[in-house]
Image (tube, rainbow, N blue to C red):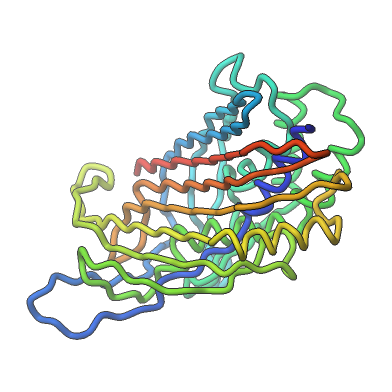
Length: 324
């Protein structure tokens, strides 16, 4: 069974947009509450360290990809917008064996959000990549660094037309900003209370494909943070989203039918597929300036090719830390 086929579907299922809570609690004077608002300003500067990992497990074994990245984040005004820029970027595999058995598609979707150059609207609700060509060039350079000078033509074409297209890169960046800031704007949450909602979400790579997701949002607790020499108050926010096997199997069947995922084989079926997302954000509630952000995605189920069935499980995890 080809690893590329398995990882393609897992990456595609993982690439779904994530809306915010959009809820306000009933007025209850006895329960602590937190109000979240936008307050990023020009002149912000932070050292950002990123750890990205991916694991794919089947009955035939397990592969891992580990990547460390760091950059200097700065902000500057551009008319009514805010530029969120990155410089001094460093991205390297964590160890010489970390990419053994991996394919470019096993990690490239994650790379698209490691080095953001964003143009953010004045209200903080949306963002786009400021220079798509620069991000694409950095990602292609890192792909070559890790996997060698020559990639098979099929892989290169798939990367360029799907994961590294202008629309796909902007969609990933917008979703990253949404998880960090945009989707939490103007929320008023009781601390310790879990809110639930159901949304029909778009796939970031193929906007005509949708998944019904069940969401949980929780403002966990107040925690101390540091902004330079001074201590500030932060809130820990958690979000969890899941899709059931019936809806996920439907989405996978549509991909297989339309042949939109590339390099598909006839007679290939998926069953019992589920998707789960989780985020943990530690941020300043008065400004949504982040101090830590973790994003985890798990896709699992059963794949059958040429009469052979086996379970598959893919987990992606990205951890950001911000030092001001």
